[in-house]
Amino acid sequence: MVVSLSTQDVRKLATWPLVINSIRNGHKLPRADIGDTFVHVRDNTMLVRSAYIDGLAAGVKAATVVPGNPEKSPSLPSVHAQIMLFDPNSGELTALVDGTEVTSWKTAGDSALGCDILARPDVGTMLMVGAGSMAGPLIRAHLSVRPNIKTVILWNRSVERVEALQRRLSDLAQNIVIETDLSKAVPKADIVCCATMTKEPLLKGRWLKKGTHVDLVGAFKSDMREADDDVHKLGHWFVDSRDTTIGHIGELKIPISQGVIDESAVIGDLHQLVSGETGRASDDDITVFKNGGGAHLDIMVSAALVDAHQRQVA
Image 1 (spheres, rainbow, N blue to C red):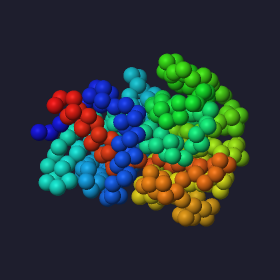
Image 2 (cartoon, rainbow, N blue to C red; image 1 turned 120 degrees about the horizontal axis):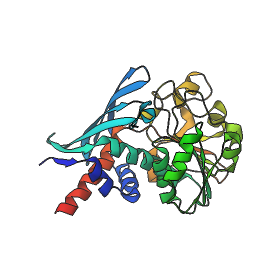
Image 3 (cartoon, helix red, strand yellow; image 1 turned 30 degrees about the horizontal axis):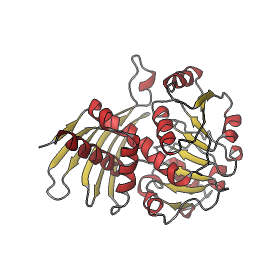
Image 4 (spheres, helix red, strand yellow; image 1 turned 180 degrees about the vertical axis):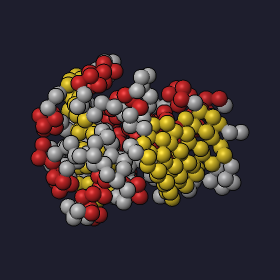
């Protein structure tokens, strides 16, 4: 029987520990075979991302990304998606999962896992750059792995949107403050998380203090990047997957093509980080994690959600 999980089902089943551990455990399995197709129409993107993970599942996520949706009235999510899981042996369809909701949890969980492995254990302040739909989940996911964070600084070009984000976070015990000057906010932070739609780098390497962990989420197209060349030169770079980042996303593709860095600047991916093969080398390192996403992550999270659902109904 095909399991079908709606938006509400995903919200009831998902927790940060479940999501983050599903990605962690998924990277203890053999590396996924990944295939992506992107179609760009003006600023909008249609994508089909597929992956096969031996021992877990095969799956496909079909999605649209419309950056202008949050500005519409009524507001709409930037991403709409559906995920299909298939039995890796028989090829039979086993589950249909709401991909829009999973994408939010998966994206934030991916970054939180990177943070859990790479950020110093004594971090106390997080900066969130951007106030879009992913800002709230990213903050909550990072706090789940670094509960000792006491202050979260918010920055966004639009004051209205950052104030709305502050209100959405009013249930948190942390001190949630707004900073209007990014150059003043960055030096205060132990973790800097960026989730914007910018094409011109916002984050300057000269603002980063020693020991900072940088989480780059927003850039997903070849002409997009959030960090300037100095971040590349100063940072110790890690990615969730080389297959979904190095040759596809401007964050790495542009500086590599311009000779600022080469591919060897990427020290490791999540497989290597989860296994302990690599990671932060010293407290002074500026670690940078590029979140590139991929269907393999959607499959890991969706399979865990389906398993949780089946345990509930058994």
